[in-house]
Length: 247
Image (tube, rainbow, N blue to C red; front, side, top):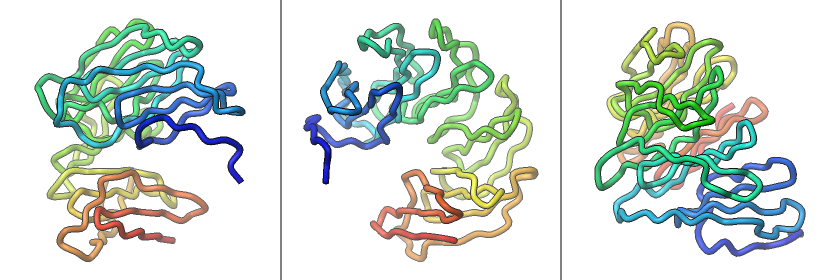
């Protein structure tokens, strides 16, 4: 049975992050909560004022690095917070415009730098301690980059797979889909890739060659969420609320 229940006032659309006895949660109404993981007590909360009505209805998963909590917001900004008190340490704007500029990709750390993207702006490299923007890529991404040893792999909104070095220089690029790449995961030592037009691809990570392609079977099928892998099985949820499990 449940140990406790806490009403946070809005839908939780990303996975909570656990760190040193705390849970960090990002809700749809642009709010960040820090909870005591044992009791559910709210330790602190931060409410982001987002003036735009047209935002992507999903949120980024918070990420912790070097005692800081990094979160992307629907107003085109990424912010860094003190974990203990929830003090905003710095914020940086990654995208311009008045709609669909959400920073909804989960930030990652690669070689000591912060990499994060926005639907309305380019993949950006940031110094995590100060928030200084170091470099911007020409590519717009819908999900966080995937680490490939000393390289990064991204999927673009144009249906491309791109391998980048740490300076965001293109090492290899291949277009595999007609519409945007929505998810990339490791599965059985290869890459499983989904697109928003309902296609799944099994890809060789060395040369980005498509080894197999599967369509989910309906013209209106799409994959907007993140595919999940566990125990050699891969689960995919389509926009038609169909759950597919591959093994």
